Length: 154
View 1 (cartoon, rainbow, N blue to C red):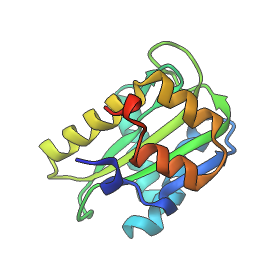
View 2 (cartoon, helix red, strand yellow):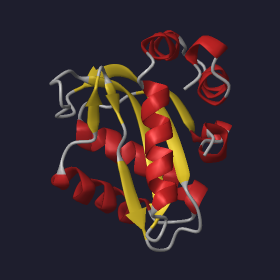
View 3 (tube, one colour):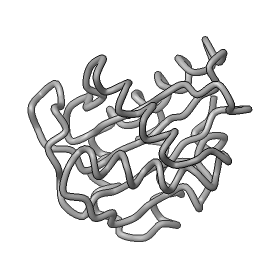
View 4 (tube, one colour):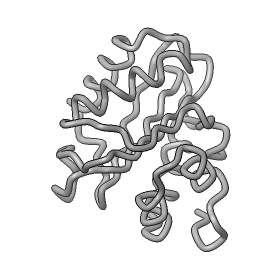
């Protein structure tokens, strides 16, 4: 599963302004809705339900919120770089400023897990995360995510 299969240029949000974890999830749901053809409230509620099971803040300023939705036909991703880090109940208690949303069909099974693993490996690269944090343009963020320099390849 390649990141370019998950995130189109219009699914990258540069300089997203949000004051809370809840607001981040709402903004991501709003951005994802037209991409996947679902109502934003449906996506938002699925994300909140998943967060109740445990935080998707994986540490080092990164969160990978995800949810399975029965009416999806494939995996969808949305990436956001926040203007200011927000508290996300991350496992390391650090605020989050890089967020990669993954939405999967309910029956995605292994594909969903493979995509999560791929995203996690990519965003575990501290040099790549530093480059993402230094970038303020949607097209540059998309290029870094989908064609990371060789030293960043996961």
